[in-house]
View 1 (cartoon, helix red, strand yellow):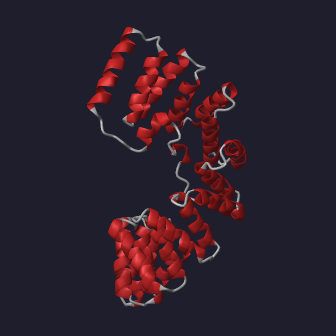
View 2 (cartoon, rainbow, N blue to C red):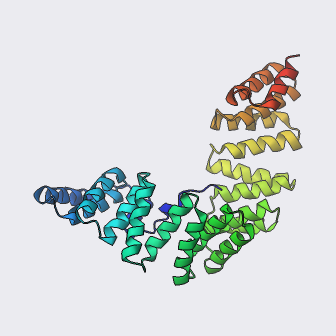
Length: 331
């Protein structure tokens, strides 16, 4: 699973601006920071000034400065739940995961009904691969709010990590039943159905594509399904659409090469696509190896030898197929 930092789902109102990547340094925010700085100079014992300046820094994605301010605020007033929540967010961003977790535990001790803290703890435990603890906190959240789609999504991720695919599918389906426009859950259902060789993956990926028409994930999933089922024209179209959106998508280039190489036997086109994959990622050993095969098939032994050699170098000589290819063209 490509787990992408669920802790930054933007559950904290305080960090919504930062989470949505709004990096516009408005004059208002600059003025606010300047004013708060003067206030801190006048009275360095007021934690509210540090908290407010940390919030302003976070809104500008200046998380290191925000973190330092929250450290000062917490030192002055260590038992304020609002301060601890922001401190936890910033600690996680600074890769201080234990500090982030401890701050949230403290909030829960003071406020057992603080479900935002419970949700964030679930995120942290998912991030640290403790699925059991994450699921326990999610149960707390879902008992309070059974229609919390983000909690259902995270429940699905935990169950997926535990290899309980059927339960994960149920969690993701519960999420899309509540919100059919929930892109992440549609994508996960598409992936799990694909891994089960279930054609329903097409429906879920198509749903995701309707929600996000430029979704490379959805297009790639559809491309894989059609490629596996030898509907090559459809697969080629989806991979081509991906490249139009993102010319650096190495996997779309590679799969276009693979279809032309392995199935269509159009080796000049395969070489072109493998070359595009290599241009997108110069360390793509598999692309060098497959291009080497195509060069070998068309009789360009010198180029084949170079590609097999490069593939071996990239894999530190641990690439048996490339080694066999190099031995074959060196006879």
